[in-house]
Length: 59
Image 1 (tube, one colour):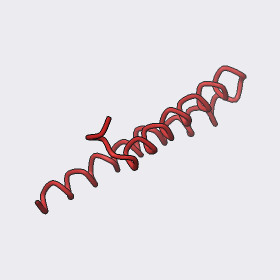
Image 2: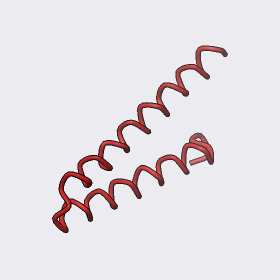
Image 3: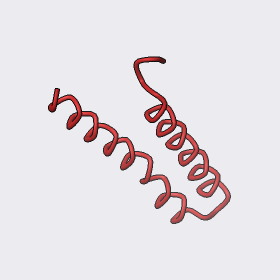
Image 4: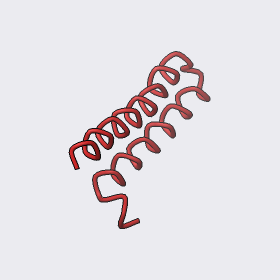
């Protein structure tokens, strides 16, 4: 856990929250909004990976 850092842990928790909200919306019948919000999690994970690559490249 120490290797992740607080910013990465917060981003992962945010992704988990987004997935839960998207599942709730999808299962309650609001399918389009559920899919739309569900696509935010992979986008945030992609941004995290991109920022990590930039940080590692500078070292």
